[in-house]
Image (tube, rainbow, N blue to C red):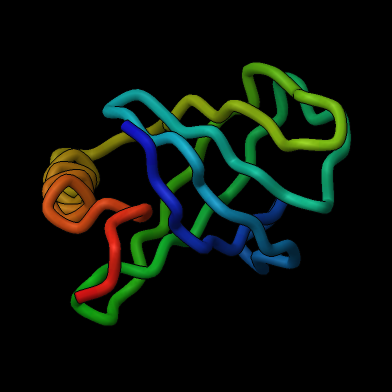
Length: 103
């Protein structure tokens, strides 16, 4: 599903880069970032702000790289709690799409 979620990410849980998730699914996401580097096959750590003012921290493997854009990430080590958090996040963004006009 289309998304526009600001995130922090990194090769370690220090989250040294910023970006935006532009597409989100149960299996992974498209992460758009200015800090694009060929990371194919690498594990990255992603931290997503949740509507409840908490953070969701998840790991994933970089599946592909798009020059000057970002990369596709497949979530890994997914727990039941992660799956529930992702469902809540997706429901929230279905109800409040990123391109919806402000009321």
